[in-house]
Image (cartoon, rainbow, N blue to C red; front, side, top):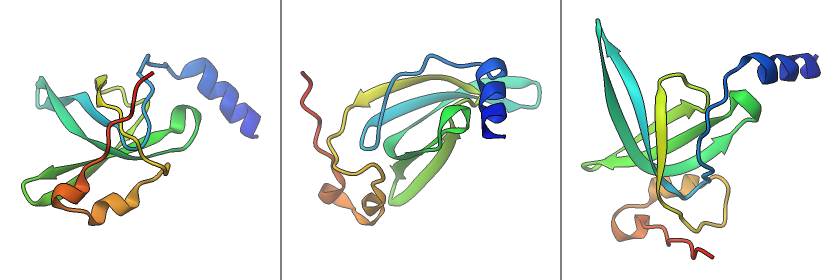
Length: 117
């Protein structure tokens, strides 16, 4: 049964060429919003908390601070409304899911930038 699901996903789901990113990276997601007859592009910039799932059902969670309130948003990787993803900073973290980041505020909520080779 799982092989049938994987076959259908590989054959019929459109794949987008998105950059490789992981937990700890700061990214900007540009996505389209429809309001009545009009469409506009909005962006969401924050730190990737986690990536979960495989194949076309993969999702990723981004967290940003809006004033003093933390805002998280979950995006499916194959969301048709996503126009592009930009990687602003590559972060250096030791875990794949950085849920401890939710409890940090101020200067403690900074992530070291990864050394690029």
